[in-house]
Image (cartoon, rainbow, N blue to C red; front, side):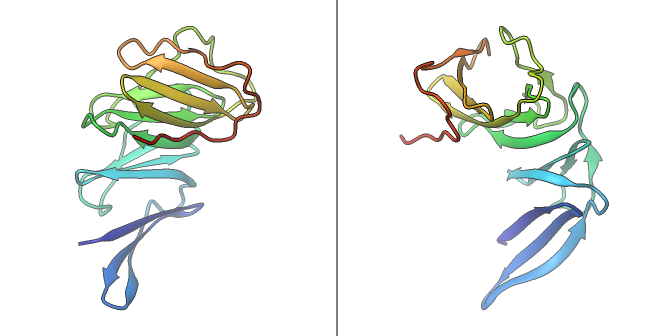
Length: 168
């Protein structure tokens, strides 16, 4: 079954694929401003302005999954493309959190950064090889080894970055 999962300022809308398009099939997490959503291996994680929620049943029921999240306004979420149960979340004020248990608990991955960065947001994190790359809304780029998560400035001569992606 193909499923669209749409984050809105009033929860999540679920839509199923049909022969002639898409059909709404559910509206969950009503009353929550959902800022980001990721799904993998039957699990949906929803980042909100007040923490993270997890569904193990395609959005029918939700449990709060914010253990260890010291900054609760989640701006974006992503999963590691090669390692199951390895997720990332960026918050406002800017802190990068990781989970290694499928989004059930989180810890800050901010070694060397002195976070949270006041008035700054993490816009995106991508994985390439054994490194993670981040772009902040202030245009700065960061890099960290996947095993230590010790962030360092990346290419300081490049200013005003707005996005980052990978191609392999």
